Length: 88
Image 1: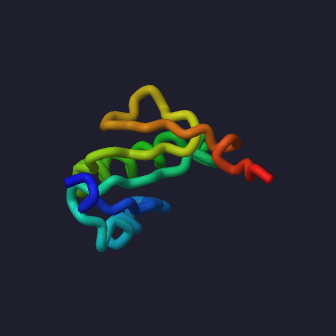
Image 2 (image 1 turned 60 degrees about the vertical axis):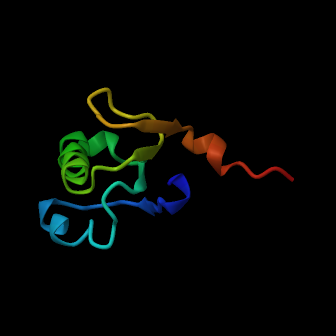
Image 3 (image 1 turned 120 degrees about the vertical axis):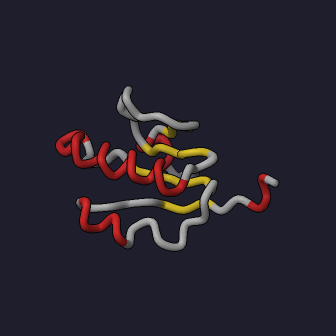
C-alpha cells in the first residue's frame, strides 16, 4: 500500500560510495534526488542514478530540479527554487 512506502533521499559521490549509499533503502521505496550541482558532473550523476535504479527499483523518484532527459523511472519533478519558498 502507498502508506507503507518510505521516502528516502539518496546521494552518492562516486562508484566507491555505491557500496554503502543505498544501504537501508527498501526495494520499491519512494526516493528523492537533487539536481543541484549535478549539471557539472552529468556522467557521474547518471552512473549513480542508474545504479540506484538497479539496486532499489524505486516506485517513484522525486527529483528536485530539472531531470536529465535520459533519466528513467517514475519521475516527479519538483522546482527546487519554488520548493524552498516559505509562505509567511
